[in-house]
Length: 67
Image (tube, rainbow, N blue to C red; front, side, top):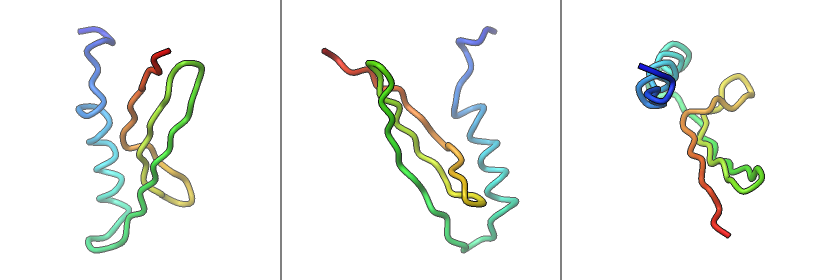
C-alpha cells in the first residue's frame, strides 16, 4: 500500500469529525467557508469549518484549468 492509495475521505474525515464532536455541542452553529486559490495552471477548491478564528480544511479538490 503506497502513498497513491491514501484517501482524503478515509483519512481526513474521521479526524475532522472527532474535532467537531469534541469542540462543538449538538445544536451549536458551525460556520463553513468556501475558498478557491489559483496556483499556476491549477485551482484548489477548499471547504473549511471555522474553529478558534481559523479555517480548518474539511475537503479540497484540485481542478486543472484547460488552455
